[in-house]
Length: 94
Ligand SMILES: [Zn+2]
Image (cartoon, protein in one colour):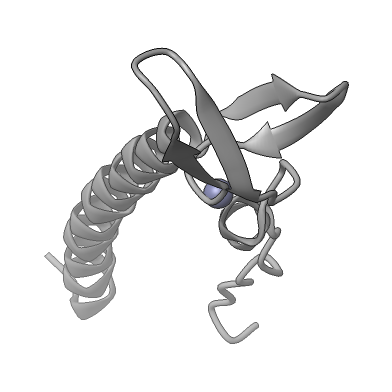
């Protein structure tokens, strides 16, 4: 085996490791995003859509509550998770 073939084989092994890790991280990120999205769910109140998690309600009886703080949905938490980070461009130097 030539040195070039050795280098290519090593690069292929490294690439496979990186690809697996990238896939794992993408899955982890998707799960985290799903958890946040489920937690910060939209709720209708007074004809508008609010974040159920960020808005604050105070119980005023067994079945009644009062809205103390109204945070529009999508809330800043959802916005932060939704922001599209610029794609990282990986170049091989060529
Ligand atoms: Zn929220």
